[in-house]
Length: 319
Image 1 (cartoon, rainbow, N blue to C red):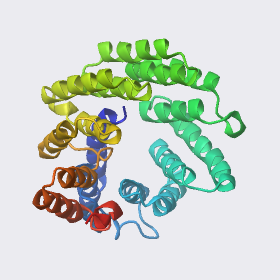
Image 2: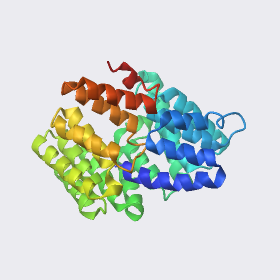
Image 3: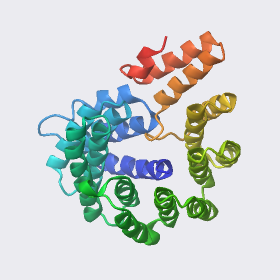
């Protein structure tokens, strides 16, 4: 899963931003904390003509978390224009374009998919040691059709590269590849190998739970989520995994009380990530509270979401 690496990279980004300017460092911290409004207030004066690439990169990422895909792509493209040598800028541009492609018409999606591939490949070319870029490129290869540059053989090549850089992600990528081939026994073995090798197993428990969800093995999925929750409660660096586990339970309409508890634990924890935006967690929790018939708590969670991101449409749409 991307969240743990996101937390580690966020720490590095804060240090990098601090070396350049205090507002960029503060914006990075706000982004990771899910404080979208604060981050944008800091970044908007900086992401202007003549501004720094990092300001545009961070603004793109805030907009990405807000599901403002078109603006995110524009700002990430500007970051790449200002600093074409940054692997991270190309990586985020690929992600923003990918989000656009998933919602575009067939012809537009076809054109965008080629750009997505090119940007992921450039991100890896610029930094062959980036586990983030390799993981996303591998995901693109195993999911995209050959006509836009996808291919399982290419994904296997990425997994081989990742063996030397991030063996756990290599196992997870091979698990995805095996699922694509409908070799579900091999896929499960890969996910379990990733779990066995992990220093922060909460994340890998949630990956295994996601596999069980795809096979409709509900009892095993719920057991894996519970194991992931227990692991996260013992590992402060892994509390972000609670967000992923809650998402699985919410999406499958199973054990909603546990999902609410996991979201509450994540929101009160000390570690947050842009991969698990706090304002999104508040919206999910508001919906759960509505289901439980607790209108007061639902209203409180909606207000908490809007306090962090006043333009986040799912929060605005809540009644």
